[in-house]
Length: 110
Length: 120
Image 1 (cartoon, each protein chain N blue to C red):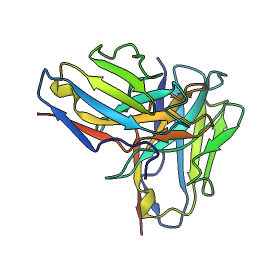
Image 2: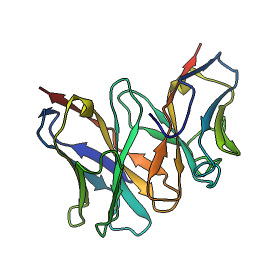
Image 3: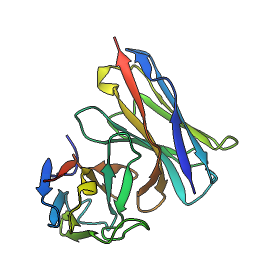
Image 4: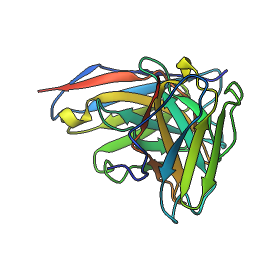
């Protein structure tokens, strides 16, 4: 069982927006601004999409944004495109050297 | 541009030891800014953090795997390695190596991953 809770699936039509949640506790997401989001595609190296809650690495489209409220972090994908499909995982620090991960959300573009 | 590449046997027998190496190119593993980590994705299950190591040798492991895992580093070759003992079918997974920021636990970049199957 994963330390962080994500919905197993999310979907939207091209052009729409979709938000994926990641719920932790006051000891991890609620206490630290160290939330990251990764996209996994079969056969490809996983890609960092968001770090430090809301920062985008170079090369990631500005359609991807991150936020946090209390113990829940969120990833929003605006203007959905077919290439956005994949499995998205959130990660958070808990102040120790452990790395907490979510259970993953499969994003489908309808 | 930093690149990571996993290597090692794709098939390991149950109860034996899984050994993988991650080769780092385009940069040095001897940086005080980063850890070097291993993660895995079992088929049909969630991504799991295995552990990470600092170039000076300090390592941290997932508590659920700690009794079976060793991560080591070879700075002369810019490589770090994973050993997982007493494997079972539950250890079948795609294994990834990645660079981890020292402070904010961000993993970037990642290697492409290597599938390791545990056979009986």
